[in-house]
Length: 259
Length: 278
Image (cartoon, rainbow over all chains, first blue to last red; front, side, top):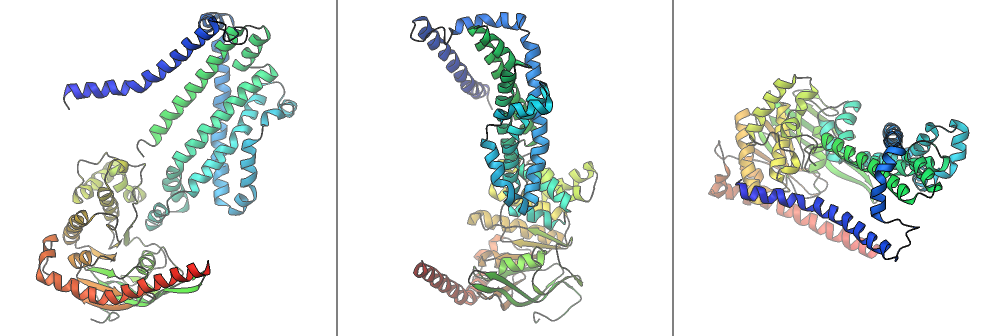
């Protein structure tokens, strides 16, 4: 390929992220104008310039990085747990049809249940600790992983299973060499959904029980009516989400390079 | 030779195979008392209209369907399940999308525990055989339908089966690609002296490649006739233009026309009945 078209393609590839960034900047500018012109009350939404200005203060005075690591660690723990137990649960439902018929509807209903409201129960069991937060995140995030694992395994193309049979694969080889990799993309969708559920619940419970990382910080800042600081802390929650999803995308690309 | 007479060179024998299925409308006999033999190194095609039980027969011989009557033997050994001597190529696209070409082809070698370097080297031989050298690191999603079927073929060949069993492997491809891939299969079959059993509904494909063609009746699928194809070998797709080729095609179409018409009529009656019932 000659240099000019290659450069054009490279430039073209930069367009989507540049457009995304421009949208965010544009949103901030519009909000700034709306707040500065009193269309939006600054005691409800502070001007974006003040939010950005409070980043330094939040980072230094509120120890945001240690809180960020705390919340990230809780999400990571819940993420590992939902992956292990969700995939295992999905496999069990796939393997035992009776179990699937008996529980699938309940698992689906669980996905829609506001588990966070049961936080007093979790506090009785685990105390006011990180485990309460992790376990609520785990329970809330488990159903989509189970359901998507089940969907992925059930949706494995019959011809791939037959290829395995034609090569005389054992049941274990059939699972690890064919069923599991075939179901992996759908399982990743489940894990991604699960992580969204986990993150929402983890930050929510941190806020509710005033313990831990970014959720507690948001609570503290809101109590002090430090609105720019509150919104800055929310930006760090978004950062946790971005870090998670980027890592997951990388892991998926490593496991399934091309579909 | 009659379908059931024995010979030392017979590598595959199907004896009185019957396949029945239970359906909502009652039991259906898909394959009815089918017997035939395949000689070592022979290319035998099974041809018949849709609904003649070709795919059921494919599944029985491949060991994927075990609730049948009658016996299937490979080199004198009765099989009742998948057998390492039989390598199957399926009609549907069956490459593993998560493995690149070389890893797809090396799959059966990995199963027998062959060291990585050796299996990659061996897989490359088969990739070259199907004309895909240079595509080793590509993934199936980056290949055309015909190329993917060649990957499947190479993967099956890598397991070095005594019998290559193919179920309409080129059915989803266009006619030109099909003819060219037919050439490749013929060349490989001749090069390896590979015993091959091809299930197809394509007369041209069957005549182009086969030593013998087993014509099946419409449901229940029985052996209507076995036709010896006396065309010179080595063959290529150029044979399609010869007069002898045309005669064989016409002869087999004569046998099939009646069966295909029965099939079509049956389908129409079935659709009419369903329409009336609803």
